[in-house]
Length: 271
Image (cartoon, rainbow, N blue to C red; front, top):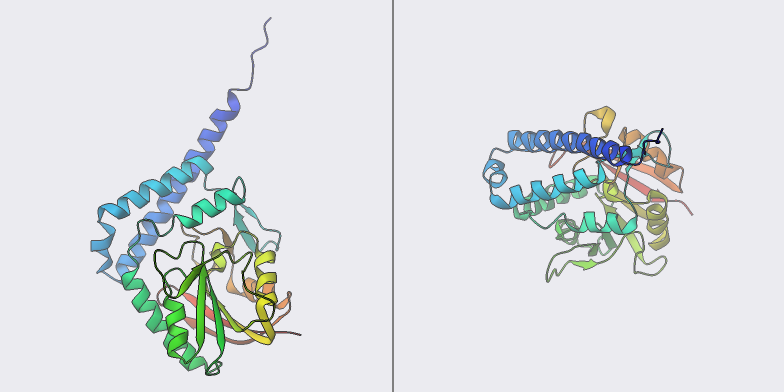
């Protein structure tokens, strides 16, 4: 009797897996957008624009190709990372984030909210040098400048003619050791390799320098990763523990609700 080949089963299983990932991703996208519209009804007009539908198609295509799969991260059971075929796929995914988004409203709002939080925290010295990682169009850079700091950002895709943000990869920061007083990021959820990212933050910070991290709540706190997240956590307690195990001391922690539910975590570099 002729043996029936089993090879065709694998692509069928992968298609089923990717379809499941696509449906899961679609539910997350719709749910996230619905929450944003509920919090800010003026977003409904933006959500209905053709460019947002083109973004949806782009995201769903990515989900179908990759399966929207996550696995346990090396940092422990409190962390997960998105499954990519490799670093180039990660870079391509992250660089497409700005393709269809209108961030003008977000940029204005985030700059204002962050400036208020920084002023309230009172941990910044006027004239401090600040490096903002994953700074997109530069709202955080401008917020630090409002506080009298010298600030610049890096991002994989800072857009065209951005006066605040340079092209750069926060896994390989293009600045020398011990060159800045403060590192800021709200993009921990977009890292590919967390240990390498943390190592770069420590490298560019001066002794006793500050890391100010704004992180969104995690899975057990009711928040799921969005379409462009690549690294996720169960809770912000897991995030603070991760940095404390890697040469940082938590010196301030405060919750906020806008533009997303999270906390501002301020760490001091040890040594």
